[in-house]
Image 1 (cartoon, rainbow, N blue to C red):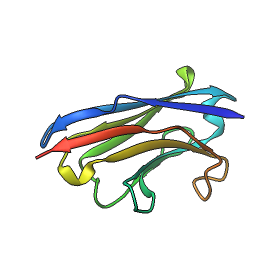
Image 2: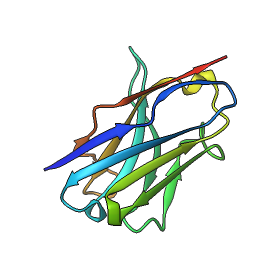
Image 3: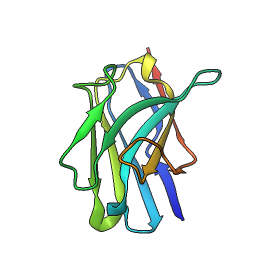
Image 4: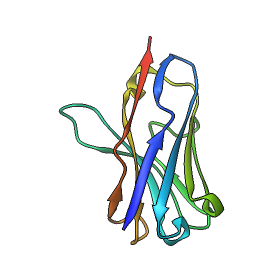
Length: 119
């Protein structure tokens, strides 16, 4: 079992930055491919970014490429999402998730943290 807890969300003006964190407890984070997702009410959950266990490979949604950076600290069981040049379309609840299948499926999810970008 893995517990994931996100933090770092909040209200920011367009053009600003936020850094989301995800603290993991349970099995070592190095066991998992990790991802960030986001969701707005009435919409499907959207993949944002993913990173393999040794941080040698990352992937991003086209909408965030060049603005967001995913990283991880396996020694401290932490996952991060640095978000720059935020715009109102980035407003959502952001979730971190852990996958035992390289990102094909995610078995564990956090409770989410709200990010609101004002124009």
